[in-house]
Length: 118
Image (cartoon, rainbow, N blue to C red; front, side, top):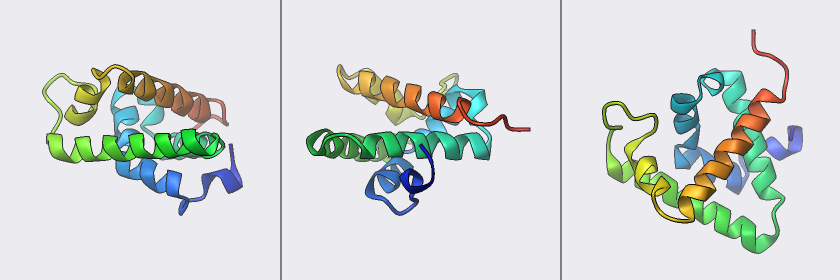
């Protein structure tokens, strides 16, 4: 996903930024810690989610916003954790954990399928 799909002002892109998931990716996956890889990951995730049918797109946006609220309400990550505390808690909720796994997979695919960071 590129260009038009990575609009910084789109609702999905804003929801993704507010979710804190790019920080989760950087903490969990060293390959996503760099700014270019992070930007490619975010563009791919938001672009993919924007292409979902309307009802799924709405659900994905709500899930991203819930992730952001959980992150802000949970405080700092516990020692030894690979993700912010709120995301660790959300990952244990059936269904939501699967959503986070799928978004992580999209992020990895989007970041690592592009040109190599040097």
